[in-house]
Image (cartoon, rainbow, N blue to C red; front, side):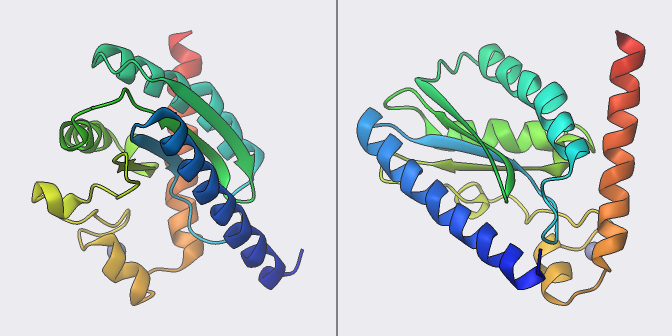
Length: 180
Ligand SMILES: [Zn+2]
């Protein structure tokens, strides 16, 4: 597929996510969590990413929700040009700041979870940002600068970032095989 066509497909699918989010927030009168893999570039649908998300990430997220007594009302699973995407509908009147904080803590517990992008939205579909919690910006995979600055300045090659991601995924899959 042409690069520009891929970008358009990703943008179109993101728009669809937004429409679905609006619909869910309205239907359940509750906020949501969205989860995806943070993969730079346009090839977000590689089989290994999909396998990693389905076999390792999804069960861990369900475990996390259970452990924190977050009894979600609904979960939508999407697989499209953006890769895997989960929308979890939270209980009505959740403490969104608290949930965002829990997810940020979760994200920093391992290199594996650092690959994830969690977003929390309230019942008005307003995003709960790191600023709301006074938390530092997300760190780059490869250096200690904020990821946004590295992305904007194109500090690293996409191939370097993908290589890092592949290594983390491979290590995690290996460990899982060993445990079982
Ligand atoms: Zn960097």
